Image 1 (cartoon, rainbow, N blue to C red):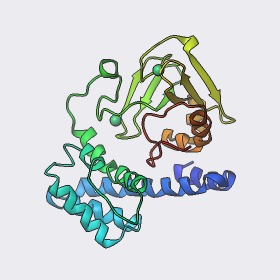
Image 2 (cartoon, helix red, strand yellow; image 1 turned 180 degrees about the vertical axis):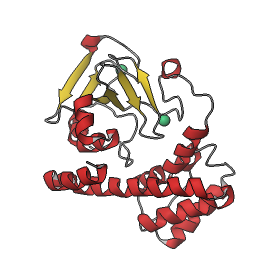
Image 3 (spheres, rainbow, N blue to C red; image 1 turned 60 degrees about the vertical axis):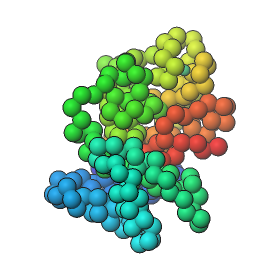
Length: 247
Ligand SMILES: [Zn+2]
Ligand SMILES: [Zn+2]
């Protein structure tokens, strides 16, 4: 089954997740269309084309879209070489909250991070920095393969890499007793670090086989984010649709 079909089914089964799932559908379309743009267009027209695609799909007003373009150009940074500069754009709009703008910029940054990841020659190892070796984001999502090895999945740039099986990817402690577990009905888990109050998600290969998409698994387990955050635990990176703090 395609991810699109799985999402359609999930919207019926989990109506409380309808709006994040619909947003994710748009993000998938955006990423897919941008991939084509990145393959076909010349470097000079990429920024315009990507922002046009973004404003069309997410119904961004024309004025705001052109404002985005000029902000990126005026920042003096090449968003394909420094995709993080998009997340840091000094944007303030009266009618829209800062949080909504951050989420919009997060989604807009996806194709720039994708291009950056693909062209980056030297990736740092997770073990060296405790962060994503491509974009420097903290780890919030991990998957465990059939051989019981764990891989981080970066929700910011899409980089995947094997990391240690047990322990906290934020403070790097590896003591089993210092990790608490919460498990939902889909067998998706959050691992809570008692030392630094960070939590990360993990799931096994059976869960992956069912949903075929780690970012989708992250979204359907949003109720776990709520429980973990209500208990005072912190998610260090947003999910694929830009949500980090829920409660
Ligand atoms: Zn990354
Ligand atoms: Zn920790």
